[in-house]
Amino acid sequence: MLCTICQQNEATIHLTEIVNNQMVEIHLCETCAEEKGADFKSHFNFGELLSGLSDVGSLLRSDKNVETCCKNCGMSFDEFGKTGRLGCPVCYQSLGRALLPLIKRVQRSTAHVGKKPAKISGSVKRTIELRDLEDRLRKAIQLEEFEEAAKLRDQIKKLEEKQEKKKKSS
Image (cartoon, rainbow, N blue to C red):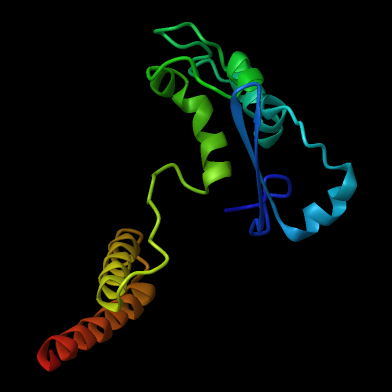
């Protein structure tokens, strides 16, 4: 996860605080944490944090195709910026174009990929690695990056050969 402030370094400090029954999280790299030091406030406005992460406000004002209110509950993107919470499940579709840049910046992707458990067996690790390589191979082929695709193909073959050897020895 990237640092919430600089958006460049990997976050190593993760702060979570409950303020008025709302969970607030911030993720910092060591550099930003040192710079903030004692100045870092324990109570910060989540809405201000979100609005600082993206230029969505200017996007909303300039793009007439971007909806600024939820069709179902009427929540505006400005209200979301103040509270840090959406009003209903339909907000994700209604405010989707405005939310995507923010989600991508915070999460590094707009698709959920999940987490791997810290303690998993070697065979499960290899299976996950194999799936990841196959996905990367498909994307490389789609983007016509054939040199990268060849490297990935070779890595897949090596991994599959290792798995076959393990099966035969078992």
